[in-house]
Length: 304
Image 1 (cartoon, one colour):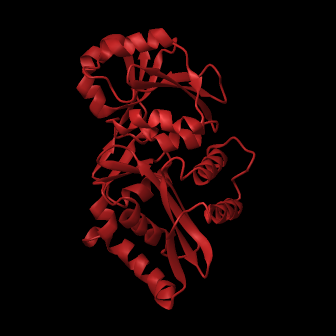
Image 2 (tube, rainbow, N blue to C red):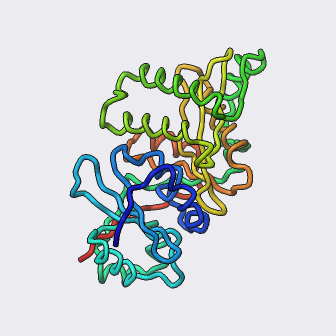
């Protein structure tokens, strides 16, 4: 099995495969795969019949390699097919196997051929779009109050503009991102930590947003970009909120941005995937405060 290095230019070739993909986990977002490629890991691809076979190699440890499920899964796909892919590629591990697909393929059949390990830090948070766009009910009272404070201080005074991210304003989003990182103090542009790599992935997404058919909005206050969000299609019912940044010092801005993203970026999708919490307690608390309708578990499979 011969794999090719993934490049931005491969989007058009891979798009037909990803348009038919059926998984709800965010690592199967094509925009995310292309934006993150070369930052923490390298991605490679191979077309087998009508499915894309993807392999990954860690930048930190070249021996750390894995596959994900075929995109889309062939009809009748089962445990024996995974074994064949693992043996044919020489890569004995699969990551990001959604729990519903563990059950669909058959846990007993998988356990007979693989060791299954939950990837707890990669459990995705999934929300109903209407919940986040409308914020109805007592459980969202605090969110609505924070938005009201932001609107009173800025929106009602004509100081705020929300607009789509386009080629013409993408550079302003990059400048905001660099300032956001500078204020954090732990985001080295040349570093290899997760936050530094995320910065480079966001910049890749912004620079190639049109080519990757992603969509985004930015929020200006007094003309300057203070926040933005980027989303992309995941499957027929769900899209992924790939990136979301806002100045934390502006009270209510993040909640305002999140609601506007739900309203403008997810029209036509029933669900929003806000990705995982990466095992970070503070991030988990933030994601849980928006009341996901479910958390989708991710599994690792290692060939016995």
